Image 1 (cartoon, helix red, strand yellow):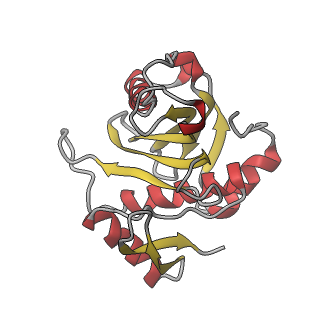
Image 2 (cartoon, rainbow, N blue to C red):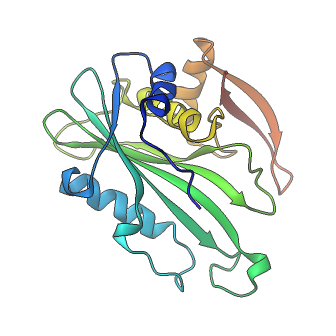
Amino acid sequence: MLAELNRNQQDFNVFVEHMPFGTDISGVSLSNVPQEALGLLQQKATLYLFNKDLKFDPADLQNLAVITHPDGARTYVAQSISTYSKGRRYSNPEDLSKEELTHLADVSADDNLMGWGHIRKPLVHKTLPTNQPFVGFTYTDQDGSVNYRNRGFGTRRLLTMNALSAMYYGMPLYSSGLISREEESVWKHLVDRRIASSFRHVNDVGWLSTRYVFRG
């Protein structure tokens, strides 16, 4: 069951409190999401439905919203449920893991796809804590007609993800235990700005790593 976004001003105020840069958020219908962004959201939701015995319908995207940034860029948001087993095929119901995924697609003011990402919120999982929404993936495009890297958009995406985590779950956003050098540089920048903190973490296979979390 997805965390319900009631789409009232109180919900959106929580987002704005964590993203107070003239950013606006509102609900949006499927028909008002640009085709490229909608296709990306649907594709990502399908990819993370690891149990292929459970079919994904594009209409299963829930809690659609659009975030408008001061520069005219927009982030389209949708949620889906991922249900999977360790072997990625259904076997025993007790072996199933379930996560809520929040997908983001960033579109520039002139309608170019800028990047994307998703938040993972474990609901039922044997090793991942259910009280730590974390970054499953974040990517800023550099392969299209415009290179959007090194322009602050990766930082803005993490800030947006944290504001969404606060709005949906009332919890700060965490990094995962395994991140790219590019993502880690963004997190370190947020630590330097005292927006995030770092901590040492031992994962479920015994590896020690550095993780990050937004400050409350």
